[in-house]
Length: 534
Image 1 (cartoon, rainbow, N blue to C red):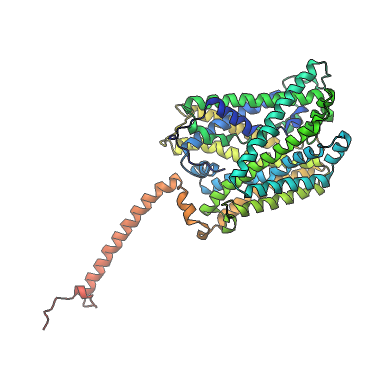
Image 2: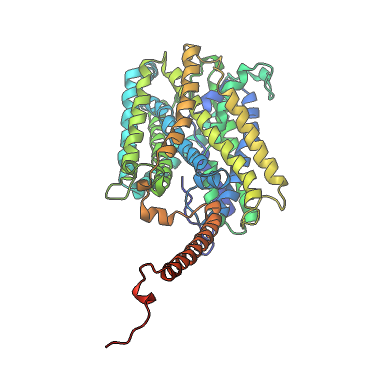
């Protein structure tokens, strides 16, 4: 997502608590809670571990980069491109866009399950949620509705996203935690295996695989870095907001996961259905069965809002970069409202194709898991590039102003950037291993989809970059797109060299003209001797 120009001259400033709440709403999603509920108490360890080695480093490093380039377009393309060149920068923005595109079917599967649970019969609802045809139809319907809304413009996107986030995420999260507290306080049976303890059995390699997907729970925090210059005294208050937001986010995830574990035995947890089943079980316990369909509608609305935000976000980022000459003109077409029409339609085609994979996967749950893992892999590559770029830029652009800086020297950047890079690398490696807790069908299909998927997706931007042509550049957009620092540095040198070459050529040309005159060759009128008119 491109970083818009941020100035410190505006009168409005974000408070610490306002920014902290923005962080929470940007990151928190309830659909992944069942994946961690199978771990019981040890799920808290994974959440805290991922927050320390990924969430906080991501937010802090992105804040420095966003402040550093607050007046330049490009977002992660700018950050990575300044450090490693335009080709690698294009890879980063491409991964951010394509990752979200592959992610849509997984989150939309959760949306389809929410719709299935709008009914009043839990047995019928569970059967409908497991039906591939129903899930496919619902996935396509929700996605294309979101796309058509996005084509209407940012005004529609903003309104629906704002209310959808509150109704479909924040309120249900708080309600789930309250229901869990009431359930235990009134003598409800705790179905969570308390014998596992806080620290997991790290000797069992399989236990780490599903936990690696927790990194994606915190993905998107880098988007908050755009607001760093809108905070009063950012060097002091921005870290405060990040820490508060991170603590609240972790609490929601931990307590929400525990609440599901209290009401559903680990062996009965389903990645796609357990959140809705958990709510239904709590409502049945409290004799409030009528509330089940209401919460299902709210969660479905939250899914639509979340998808809508991402449909219009990363696609707009790669659209801005594409107009600077990195994508063919076809991808630069807009509708009357200036919305990136063709990119959204191509994106929809990819989502449609991925959704059709339901027919070859053994179950909706296995399809959900394998696409989730591919999403994690691609996003983590982008994050590793971002962390590495932040460290490299401390040396390549050491004299560039950093309105928000991590530490006085380079030590804190090395610590946070290094921890974030290594944490991302660990999760990347673990994401290739099939989870033992879930049936994913053939291991051959699992590895083939992940490995081939990574190779194709990572290779595609390099092919596009190699094929680019001067005609791809939109002159107006290219003029607004500031050059990289290494381009700006080379420009004066090239200009000086061009001037020197021109001067040398002029001297040589003068010599040739003079020589020609002396040798009796044809002379120009200016070189001819002056003669009086008769």
